[in-house]
Image (cartoon, rainbow, N blue to C red; front, top):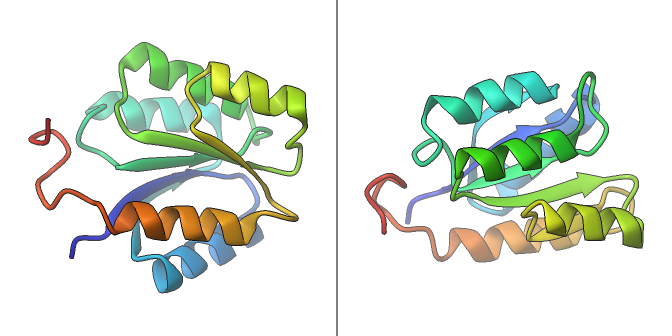
Length: 136
């Protein structure tokens, strides 16, 4: 079974390291790239919006720029990969804003990490073995 290809936008090295290790160990996720800022995420998405990843995991507050900017760029670029947000600021208003920018889910870093892992594991069970660009 192919792994779910995930790209992570997170500026905390500690959180990033733990998240990558946990997802790869528990949820059959292959982390195909990481960046700590909005501009890096947009550059990465711009290379080939359909073939890079199956899932983007995005923090809201980044080293520079925001996760909201990443979500907006993904919409503008026509990125078909699923997008979720992992944040310490999972207020009702933030959840609404993220959803309006195409995020499927918003997970609270302090209380919903297990939910994110479960979500990724469920997605991994349904990964199309063909490259994303070839899938319809």
